[in-house]
Length: 147
Image 1 (cartoon, rainbow, N blue to C red):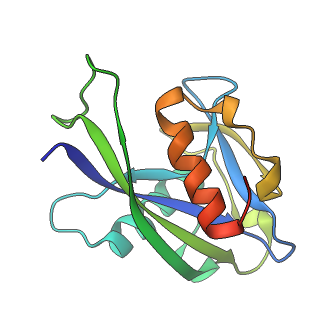
Image 2: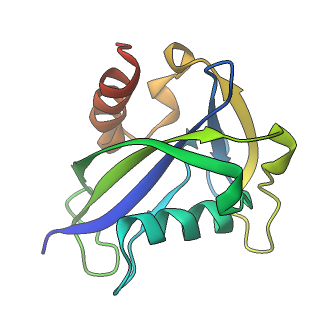
């Protein structure tokens, strides 16, 4: 298998803004919470785990609105991750229930430095490595009709 099965969460608030998070290891790199599907996990189980791990959001704090994918991208030629040459993400559109204060990126092994809420059209593709840009363009177009 070339592509690592994975999930990504697009968390949306009541006003239509989406959550993006700045990577702790790459200042200026913003993305959606995401992660690999572990052996024996369903995509939904992986989503719930990743959302809890990365932004401390419990399952009762969001509802799943829709899911699309997989969206695939390849790593640069010399790179592999856990033996895979790329990732295949199922993107979940989530609706936040309750306050934005429920989102917390300050976990013990934090993957993110900070989080912010933007309109989908405000996403800047320069925040991403080149390999992810075509996927994010398709995802934002498919979910929100943006270019």
